[in-house]
Length: 125
Image (cartoon, rainbow, N blue to C red; front, side, top):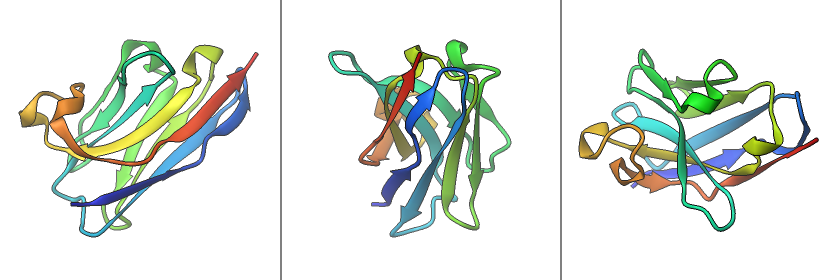
């Protein structure tokens, strides 16, 4: 199983930007579809963005479209999430995940079998 470690995030002012990175180890993620999810206390994990194995196809939840960009570098075994125009509603723990969309769809967390430990993003108004 691949190990995923997120970095980045932290405290950001509303309207600002930050970039999350996810470094994979243990094996290559070139055959994995990758996703970013987020979770706030008391709520379930929600889909944020996903990217296909080649990087040629991306998906986003409606509330982040035009503000967030997911990308991957298969040579470096990394996935990134560029987050712009942040709002307090984006405050959450963000998780990187690796999996296969055929197992449930790109926005379904059951399609992903490997998860990072999460990184906190806090947006202040």
